[in-house]
Image (cartoon, rainbow, N blue to C red; front, side, top):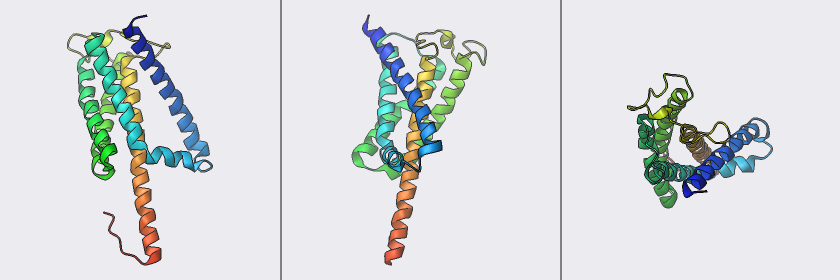
Amino acid sequence: MTIIDLVKNLLAALTLLSHISIIVGIIYFLFFRRKFGAVFIYFSRNGIKFAFAVSLVATLGSLFYSEIAGYAPCKLCWFQRIFMYPEVALLGFAAIKKDFKNILNYALSLSVIGFFISLYHNYTYYGGALSGSCGISGLCAKRYVFSFGYISIPLMALTGFFLITVFLFLRKKYEKTTKSALLLKDCMQGNDRDLS
């Protein structure tokens, strides 16, 4: 087994694990959120860190595929990279500086746009449009990775953007809830606090 095969299998396994986690998260959100609220709070409070980890793995994975494995990225892959690569720097700075308020909206905007580009990429990749319609030389039609019977590079990217978006939405909700709780506490104590 070569290093390329090893990394391909590792990234596919991480994607599969992410899909399982998404399903468990949906079940938790629908049925158990009120009963086990601490889990929700944990992921909300640490959403920036989780989003950073996902963006770092996605960026390193895409660089590995193009620079080490030699897989030529298609046009839509390049557009997705434009929205993924800055996430590493933005979210890394946010995590280090604890400056979530100012960076959160920028990072969330990048992830949402990247998600929709990736969604369209998957649509074309899995046959929703003419094969290879997204690339100049039809690179999207080439299957460099197809693990577990469904995981491809475009699906890995879609999963990454989805996770980043969810983690950032959770963090945004946490910020709003925390701000509201502080305002309520101050009102009850008669204090004046500006949390804008």
